[in-house]
Image (tube, rainbow, N blue to C red; front, side, top):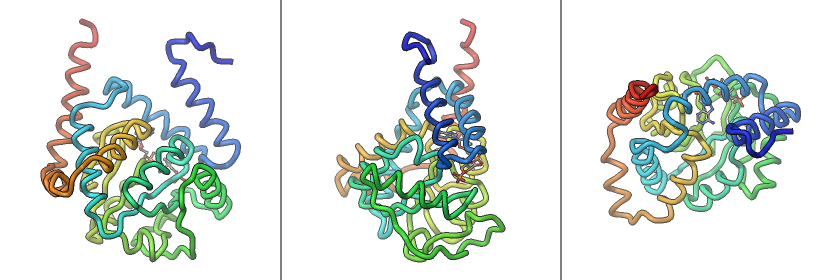
Length: 243
Ligand code: PTJ
């Protein structure tokens, strides 16, 4: 029982939810440790959307709106944390949704697909093939999904796949609380924010941006500058932590 007046109530409830999802086989056990790493970085950025993450979310929406074949790649953590937000982003962006897992089993793919569908997400299905030059199972994807996408949104991504996708000429938008991760460095555009905060911002911009604005924001970002700003935010919070 977590008392509602506990100062970390939300965080504890999320952990409880993720532990349940792990027991059900939606989240991998490793996903729990990945969440813990995310929480630590969220602490450092102040558990809020920073100004640079907001700008990155706006550019992400612009890229999705202008894409010929946008795809949202969903793993266990994202499905467990934000199924409704994925449904809303799919509606606003017309992106396809594909389940892509690091710890891949047919059973997990089935369970995550069914969870997403219960929340109104249309999930791409088919025979996954080893289409990416990776030795782990994130290489498996659908030819008609990630395989032929031009823009891919990857919350909580693996650095290797991020790099492989950009080297294939795809535009990769990462959501990752760690601005120092290989994913954040390799992505075309990195949103340094918590996934449940970042997705609604992208969705809102998908609904609001005009075509001209989308053109402006899809080109007018610099990922190095966005990452530098995120690191700077952490720096200045640490500088003032004991004030
Ligand atoms: O469901 P699977 O099998 O595909 O496995 C998913 C995990 C997350 C276990 C797998 O992709 C993995 O091992 O990821 P990493 O390499 O640990 O990277 C996860 C990144 O996401 C880390 O940099 C974390 O800081 C970040 N992260 C964790 N939770 C969140 C987050 N970023 C945004 N929002 C979060 N809630």
